[in-house]
Length: 371
Image (cartoon, rainbow, N blue to C red; front, side):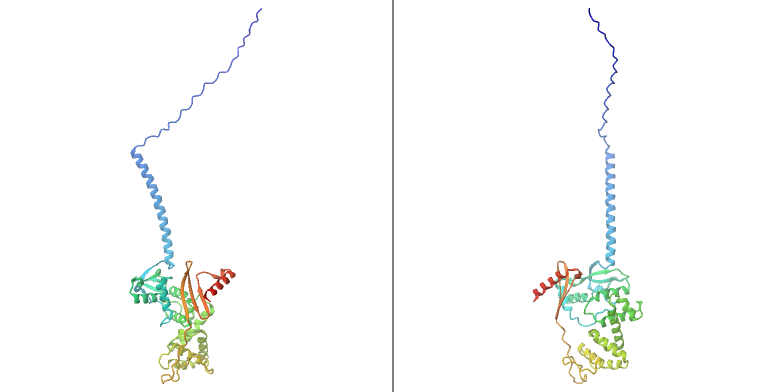
């Protein structure tokens, strides 16, 4: 007996039809017309050019501001013909007469050039008023007169803009010259007197002029300048070599004159008696005046007894020998002065910051090298 097969109908879910793959976008570049390409390239070039011009303008503005700042500070230098530099506005603090150190300065400039340009101010007439550097200008004039070479016909100068005013010009001159060790109190007093007498300046008294001009100096130094100013007031043109009067001698003479005003005429007569004297003779008269009852030292210069009547003429005390020169060490300018019992080195940096042991070792090496 055969078995019957049973068939079961199972309904299977229909499978979804496969999705059609997305069509790839058409990436083929579209062709530009020649005119569109030219316009695009021109626009890009214009944009790049505008950016470059903006950078150049910004750089030029920065350079212009920097130049103006340097010019106001007198740090913009150029060569100026010697004939265009004038010395009319300021009374110089350098006493007239031969400068014993001028030969050394001329030799230094001839060999290594001018390390520090002079300072001038532009004038409305196109010329330049000297503010700082009278000795440097004099050295250049001497070199030009000696050689006639165009090398010395113009001098490097830092140019200050016009309009700083007389007071500012005096301050610049005075502050630079305060560092000169050979600048006498009589010379500084002469500048203060001229500044107070100038109608274009504010101070009306020498005391105020000293305060304004020598603001950078110590109080004691300003008091000495005022004292020498009073001494010049009392003796006037009778003093021929006031720049050679030492500080203590000048103060002693002033003290005696202020204690007894009747002695002013007497001292003037002593100084004016006879022909013009040397600095040594004038100093001997002043020393004798301050200590009339004290005999002079045997080697001290003595005034002529009966001046103009065959008396012996005094001799000027010998000048202490001194050697001054400039040198360059690792790009730094060093001014050296060697004298009797002293050696001075001037640098543009603070040596107090150097460790003491290092300073001592360096000085020992220096002394060993020159011994």
